[in-house]
Image (cartoon, rainbow, N blue to C red; front, side):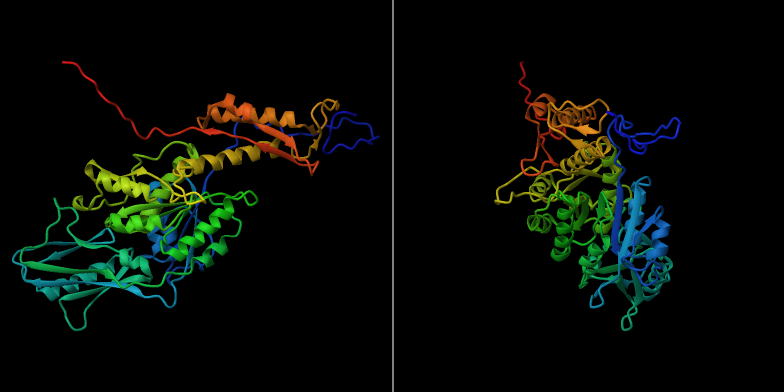
Length: 492
């Protein structure tokens, strides 16, 4: 008997017509790869979800309930869902480090209002507005600000009137750790609408002295082998970046094959961000330079990752430039990076943003932190995030094609004269199928140069293991249209 059956035995003697189904030819095109995303961050004690426990979320309100209103993770979830409500999204929290220190800052009022007005203090990019009467004292304004901050449970800080100086408001981050140092305090972000009441003076001491991030190795270990294509990573200290880089390198390796990328963001000037980028070298990590934006870096990371997850699933090779980051506030115009600074950051492994009319923040170029080869030489192999996403998709569809076409097949040499319908595959058959797959990649706009691909393809039986087929394929990835250069030679 030539035809191979899965569930109908060869020795059936009972009369009847026995028909089985075989799905190995059902898939006509490329396998779909739905993205799964994971948001990682710190939780507050008020959150109902235990730490290190992944939960699927579909709304920002769920994150606030499960991880605590005003928590880092609640803010990240809000930024995520402002940019992407479609991708399957999970969240996992970790508690603050017990030995950590919460960042703090102050707002001190002076003078006396000479006219009624509205005080507009921006806390981590969120407006806190306080009505000021002409008869108010500086201490009255301080007390009113404390009440306004307390009324907004989504803020990542608490406030109290200083016990010695009643005109001073002491502001403390809800979380312990370094992230509190990046919680921006400023007046009058919208200069066309915000103004400090006449006669009132305001002195702000920026948030500082936060210390002690959680040990991210714990949260990495809790991931197990769950597959997440995009991970939002809120910590940019060296130890925690190393933890996620090491985990992702292992996930991309040829045995685990559960590849994913981590998206982080960092605040600071061009020099500090450049130094951060120069200290890393991972093809699986993107760090976006948030500059001096009022929006906290973890929320920048969530917004960028949300756009990557949505658009990367649609087309992993298409660049992300010009995509707007909803809910993210741009740095003040005087603080925005110049063209030269952004170009330097890209060479330092820091992804960049630009600001369009109306203060709309947009992705400019998402580079990974990979800059150097194993030998320490400059290398562009994994420069752009699109390269990593495309490679991940090629591997996913190659595996899906092989495992779907030949799940329980025998392996024979080319030229073997086996009967039609036998569950046997040969190197030549596999090579033909891979070429067909490559043409599907080409049709999808992921690769080019199929003729050269076909010529360079090697499919052979392993010399030491007769049950193993070894394949070498050299796809030419489609590139991205990022730069246009032209010289206009004119006549008069």
